[in-house]
Image (cartoon, rainbow, N blue to C red; front, side):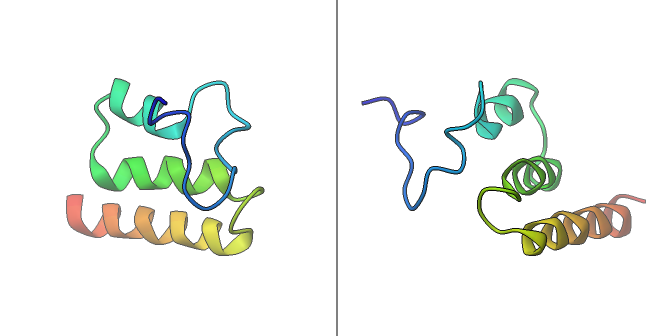
Length: 67
C-alpha cells in the first residue's frame, strides 16, 4: 500500500484531491510554511480552532525568524 493512501489516526486528509504533504513536497516548501498549509487544510476535519491557532503560531514564528 502506498504511504500516501495510508493514514495513522484518522482520515482528515482523505477528503483532498491531493494530500497537503504532496502539495508541500512538490512545491519544495520549507518546514514552517508546510505546517501552515497542513493545519489550515485539516482544521475542519481534525483539530478545529486549535489547528487554526497552530497555523497562526507558525506564521508568527515565520515572521519572527525570517524577518
